[in-house]
Image 1: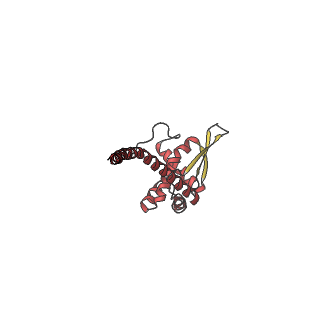
Image 2 (image 1 turned 120 degrees about the vertical axis):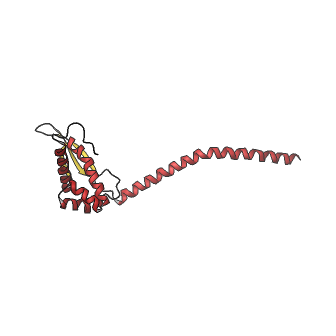
Image 3 (image 1 turned 135 degrees about the horizontal axis):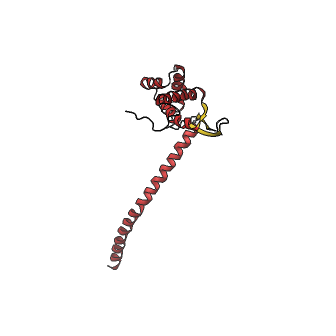
Length: 171
């Protein structure tokens, strides 16, 4: 059974918070970026990212789960046809929160939450190249760690051979 969040719930009950976050997610998917308070942006980020992950999977079960949260079918359609495929190669981190200062009327800290750009082919290739480089460096360090143990064995094996050569010279 899911546990409700402890403490303050953005100025209302748990049901009010759930509807508020659903409406903020709907606006985020519709416009791509929204300006809201920092607290709301921080609470919205995991909700929006979970919905995008469901859209990436794209099956009917996940579509119905998203429709339970966002009731506007046109926005759900946009989420599944445009936003989800855009982040196909990205393993999370679909949103960015940028602080923009305080609101004029009540001095509330404000932030912009926006969908980040999808990884381009060049960025994906760069990421793969960096990962390959890290793997190669790791393999080299493992080989170097194994190499001294093998070289000791080789040196020990070489010494008896030298002694055998010396013995054959003496004979």
